[in-house]
Image 1 (cartoon, rainbow, N blue to C red):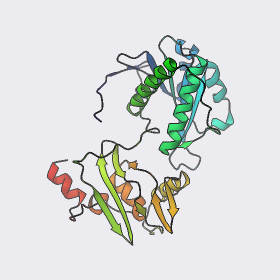
Image 2 (image 1 turned 60 degrees about the vertical axis):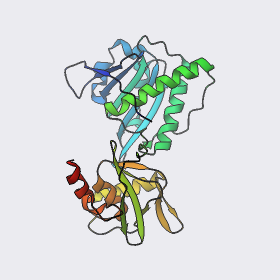
Image 3 (image 1 turned 45 degrees about the horizontal axis):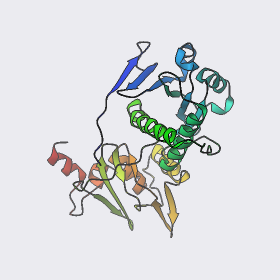
Image 4 (image 1 turned 180 degrees about the horizontal axis):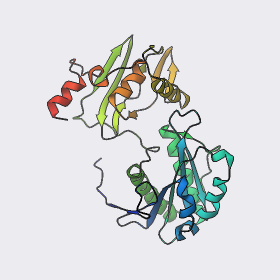
Length: 285
């Protein structure tokens, strides 16, 4: 299915590109505020913090193995974020994302529905550690309200990657023109392809169980984190990807598969033996 183009207007409210950013999408009643935790004191003074909505708290995990995410809903951002600021159990949090209606008109059932859907999507994507202790229950909405909130959610999910949040992304299905690439080593086989989201390893791809001494600490930690999130599980004596999963680079994907430090541009090959490096050279990419 072809993606629909859209426009986003991002206003850098305090002149600092890493500070408060207010994002609005064309033909949408929603509004997003993105800011670091360090800016919370200044942002607290804004009128939007009086509104209701859903929010994301994002930061590193305790061991530094990837990101952790908490998803919440509130009838007043100012009060709820102030509580989180004083709470020890949200110590991981470094970046904040608030989504509300431009007139603050989201009701309790609507924001609870958005929270429920976001937690469900984040858990299914398995890209981050979800810090919510329990899955929020789905509230009862009228058919019209549900349809309206599904559109609101769809626009949120489109905007989040632009704001740097990939926690909800599912790898795109490869087009028929995509070239599938393979790693075959030590009795395992993995399949992947390049996409706009990075390098995607396909569901069912196998992973070398033992790590080589050459593997970096970061790659070893990433492999373990993927196992902790059940992206990779043991099945019939082998470690296997349970879903399509995108990585920032082909080398990261190759390191996870092989358990070693490796150049992904030469490790990934077509069925005819042509390397990714050669393919990129031929395409000029």
